[in-house]
Structure formats: structure tokens, C-alpha cells
Image 1 (cartoon, rainbow, N blue to C red):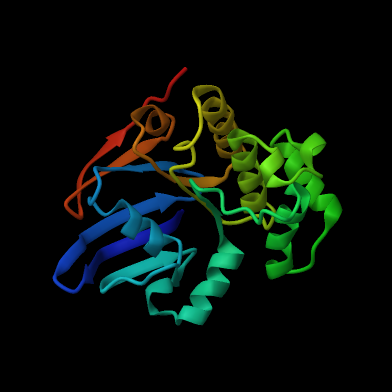
Image 2: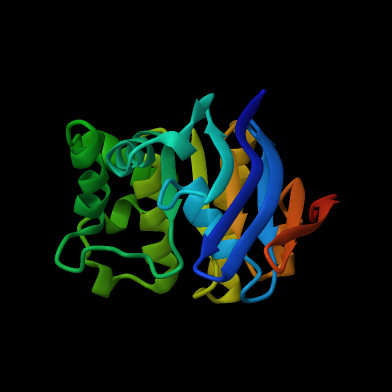
Length: 223
């Protein structure tokens, strides 16, 4: 069953064609990587999939709903309810603890629940750092807080933008191992990355060039 479908999707900014006639389906429970050089359209595609932008032409279906026809207000609600976003730059609130940063996502979705937020941190191995501020956490720990925050509302889709871009090799592997566990549990994951080793762990890699899909690679994964 397809969770996400892009049909003839194009995006233009003035005279710039960021995406051109993209057709792509992502099945429920699939792990997809999106790669491409700078300017290839990766960020534009991520913004459209993540309900942060709308296509200039074509249709995008998320969980059966044509999100390309929704208002900006409805897209905000859909992003909150359906998508768990993980960013390269973390975007944690610097005066809130790790636990409170996770609970912020609950606040905008329903009701904060400290017990659930602590369980989410425990899932990424950070229960013992729950009361620490972002400045007291390493880059890898901050990224794991972001993952816990993205998971707290049980999203239909986990969308990660360069999730290992600011991490050293050891912390990169920790994050990838968390993604592997989530995938094994049935989560649908899309990772935008420039790192071929990160992309290898996905089931498929979509390679963008000049706003078009140049090729789709079936991955065997790393041992």
C-alpha cells in the first residue's frame, strides 16, 4: 500500500525549475533515500513531501489525501499529525531540557505527557540525559533528542534532512542503528542525504539531477 505518491510534480520559483515532472511512490513501511548534488531539487522535494511547500503543478498524495490542494493552515495540521521531521541543525529550544523539547511536540499535537516523552528518550538511549539542556549534550545526543521528538506523536512518515550531516562516525552509526530499528518495526522513513553510506541502508535510493529523477537504485544494504 502506498503511503506517499507524487504524480507529475513540478515546482518553479520564477524562471527556476526546481523540480520537473516527478513521479514517485513510497510504500507503507519503506525506507527511501533521496540523493543528488547541490541544486538538484532535494530540499524542494523534501519541503513538498513534508507539507512545508506546495507544487506548482502535479499532485501529492499522503496517506490517501491530495495534500497539494490543501491550504497552508491545513498543511500545518497535516505536518503536525502525519510527519515526524528530523533536521540537520537539530532546532532544539536552548532553554528547555531534552525532556521538555520532546514534550513541546506533544503540546502542539495533543497534551504533554511526561511519561511518554521519557519513554521516547529511553527509546533512543537518552533517558539519563532527560534533564540536560541542549548545551549540555553532544551533537549526537542532540540529534537523538530530535528523533525522540519526531517519534512522540507516532507519525505516519519520518522525514529526515541530512540527519548525520553534523555527526562524527560513531554518532552517525548510532543514528543509523535507530533508523534500522524503526524500519524493522514498520516505520516509513525518507532520508535526504549527500552521504552514499547512509543511503546504502535504505531499500531504494532516488537520485535527483537538475530537478528530475535521474535513476532509482535498489539497495542491498550494509551488513
